[in-house]
Amino acid sequence: MTQMTLRQHLRAGSTDTDLMILFEDIAEACRMIADEVRHGAFAGNLGAAGTQNVQGEAQKALDVISDEIFQAQVGRNTRVAALVSEEVDAVNWRKDTPQAGDFIVYYDPLDGSSNLDVNLSVGTIFSIVRLDASIETTDSAVQIKGTAQIAAGYAIYGPSTGLVITTGQGVDGFTHHPGSGSFLLTQPDMTIPPETQEFAINASRYDLWEAPVRQYIDGCLRGVDGPRGKTFNMRWCASMVADVHRILTRGGVFLYPKDSGNAAQGGKLRLMYEANPMGMLVEAAGGASSTGTGRILEVVPTGHHQRVPVILGSKHEVAVIEDYHTK
Ligand code: AHG
Ligand code: MN
Ligand code: MN
Image 1 (cartoon, protein in one colour):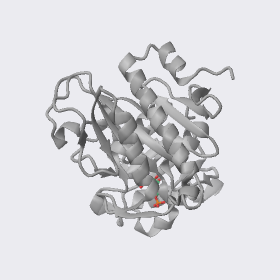
Image 2: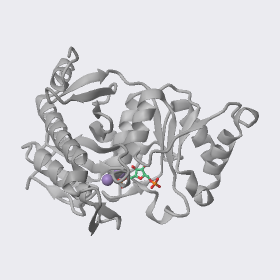
Image 3: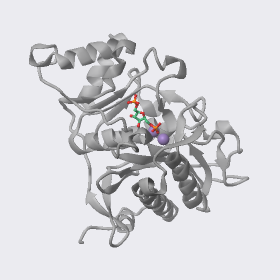
């Protein structure tokens, strides 16, 4: 066991002490969520909670449990002004008068939870914004563009528990070491190659797609004789954390576009809990993230549960897909 711990890595990078403590609180929450996920079958927690979240989606018992753990662990941090969760309608204000230097933490407590029953990878996604002035405790105060994020990351609950973080420069991957309880730096400086021959999309929605997405995927499927002149491989985990983790590991492109089935909501994935943090990570690893017509991090939020089209991954491939959208 010679790898750096999460704290040693953050210290080596001269991370601000408040941010370092926040990362450690988030890491603690993720370790506890990992434990609940691992024991879900024994506790009878893999199934539905019998409730719906604000977006009308059926909640799993573990969605609710994970949210409670995150609230308890991260919400006790004295620099956290607000928690904004995919699973909770209202902004959870922790301070009456948020000041400059306080944090807002946006999170998806359990991403890919439809995979729980089939024992596939799920995760927790988070995004951190630091206030540069005091704010009112209103909904609009947390509607901040992705470019303002100072840090983002996710935990992945797979064959091992991983934690992947960025503070803007570079992306680093840690693995939970069960013996010591530490997250150890196992994938320093994760980078996404600019070119790829692998795409990820839920192709069962083909009939619903807009023309640019169909054109792009049709071109990939035609292989060496098609417009792309190369063969493509396909993956779809139905868990954004797992799909993005693969892209940070070996490249690729991920699409959850706006289509006729989700257009009324603006797309499927959530801007503040999924698209912004993953967009920041992918860009920090040398990739690109787009709605098809512009950078995800530049989207001006109009609501904290807002949804957006998401296209992210290898830079040149994202540019090709943007081209199909603009032509
Ligand atoms: P969540 O479990 O937090 O609601 O998110 C699920 C998301 C994302 O993880 C995944 O990429 C996508 O929904 C899967 O969608 P399909 O069911 O259309 O495959
Ligand atoms: Mn999710
Ligand atoms: Mn979720």
